[in-house]
Image (cartoon, rainbow, N blue to C red; front, top):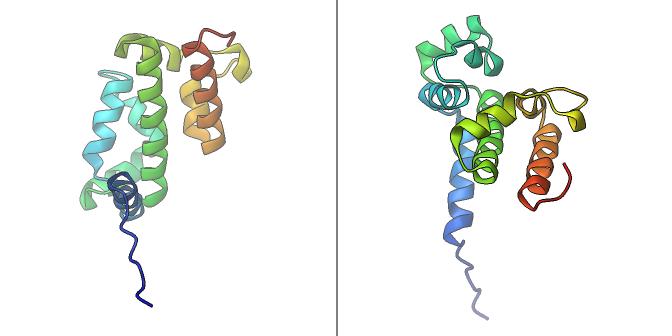
Length: 135
């Protein structure tokens, strides 16, 4: 009997490739772009992802660690959902930086930075907002 070879779907292949990129560490420029999108002109946003001294070391290798890359990808995903829901970069930034009562008056950005669970919580709030239900 001949064995069948199942080819990955293009989306699955891209996901696997992205997972490997995260493991290897994303380039520093990805962090610079996201920080600029989240808070234009505010360098302090960089340090929410990577402490200042660590970032200086990362500049030499031009790569983030796997953990820092995962955090960056997590927040970029939340930011993308916020842009979809709010319809603009400015309103998405405002939502992410404004304290929210369902997050114990913390900001969605801080909660998403903290953990995957926090990011999913923020995405659920955004989903409810996007569907017009109470959030």
